[in-house]
Length: 442
Image (cartoon, rainbow, N blue to C red; front, side, top):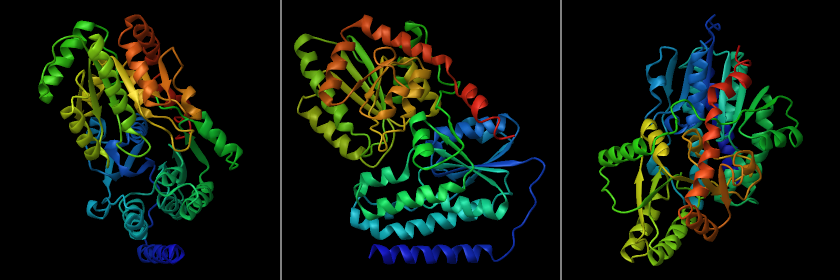
């Protein structure tokens, strides 16, 4: 059954390409060379690709940023004459499903839909580009479509590896599923056509070099952009948070309160139950020992959000969170940056499906001078967080609970981590990008 769907999908893909290629759309590359920045996802929820586009435009390039336009973009992208946003239609929500069988049945149709939208955007709705910079994952059909268009338009393909697509698919289907193995083969085979590869970690670059023979791989670390800044004054921090809370309609809290912030995608690779159980455990001890209340602000969107909101409501009704207040929000980039600067501690639940990617949310937290505790049971964690210096790692909800108790009852320990996080503020995206990527896009 799977083989039949794959064959049908391949034939349909060839048919789509044939139809689209029938009328010639040849145009010479202009002297003001364009760079295409491509993400087969919501541009507004793809900060790294937005930062790429901003850096390219600031260096004088014309930029076509291609993807779904479902949420607010960075103000620079909306206003810059150098940037053109090319929106493609997303896969209709009514066809999205977490059911494994329905997912497999709908997958070929989804691939066809995405292929049509992406190919028409890259080959027909944009001028020929000097470079096409593609986010991976998703790898299907992004890498193949980008490869075909780059061949047809004499464009240099660059891949920005955020993770490995097959490792994410394995979360849904299992690592031994035939489609996962096919996806892995496809991902590495098609990506061979890219002469330039960026990765988010050195560990990921090492995998591409040693296992897959890539010659030109540049680790380009996520760094916070300029709008993430620490709030140096306690008075300004408290007043700023009070104003933001009022604007969001959150009630004020009496007594000592610690502000904890976590950004989550509400997906399987970020198990929110770990944080929820840790908060419940903290509440039990805090109630008995009269410890500070935690105000936990959770930002982000995702498929499991409603499920966890119902769990939170049930736990609150059962009085399991008496010393914890949980608020969820979808914030603008400016409000999110402000929230991080007001907070006492950040939490990362990112588990890394591949073991070699890193959570960008931690980078943003460091940009605001916010110390972090995070899931640390994967290889690349130590490339970002220095244990006991700018953050701490955990491997279970019990360990996270103990960290919350330790840090929220030990001002000196939290201040020490804060000092380490503030030192990370000196590492900025513009410096990283100019040194490593800027010289490539000449």
